[in-house]
Length: 301
Image 1 (cartoon, rainbow, N blue to C red):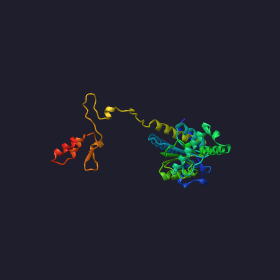
Image 2 (image 1 turned 135 degrees about the vertical axis):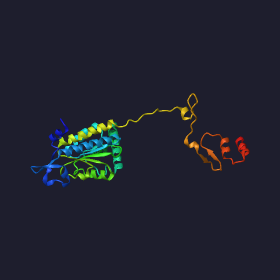
Image 3 (image 1 turned 90 degrees about the horizontal axis):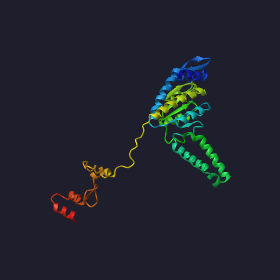
């Protein structure tokens, strides 16, 4: 089945009622039927293709993509597809400052790891009272519910995918402050100005959301395959080469570090060579012109 037929069957072209539309969505609306706006599927396909190309490029640069969808219709699709590509997601509640105050969020995630360690090791039952154990369990459940999807996000994402612009307005504002590009599935009552790449479509249909998220995650998987592989060099280099010695034939000249080319003042009016030069060479180099005997005497001393 082609992508167009799959999108039409999922009902992605059904918008909101005519009375609740946003005039900024006029370029993406095909017409009206039974007082309901019909979204132009061509614009939907165009947005999906642009988003797929952009996400593949972002992921290819070793950057993550954050998926945000806290409405009930989007949770299942986001959690399923993001787990396959190992991308961070927020499906429970957007905490204020998740991006703009990311340092504090990382501290809460470290607290989650500490509580996980207490639970898995059994220290919570042995070292704490029942009252304290109940408090720590409630704290663990709260942090896990809100931040479990982004616990592997060690840095700010390179892009953000959002379902329902009106519901995730706080997340979009934080992304705009930090300059993070946004890709949004927008219904006819949304504002496309918050999206860098808008995907006009029905954001209340579970099937439509699943198709869009699946296509975007497929492009993310392609981008992960195109990531450059770091070349692993030898663990230890040859000590003879580190010392500047040549090969067995002795043809290669001895190498010296760049620091050895410079001389530094030892505080007594003489300059000390930073390289392996001898004391005689050092004094001879610093002796004034016309006094070779003084230089030789200093070297013999």
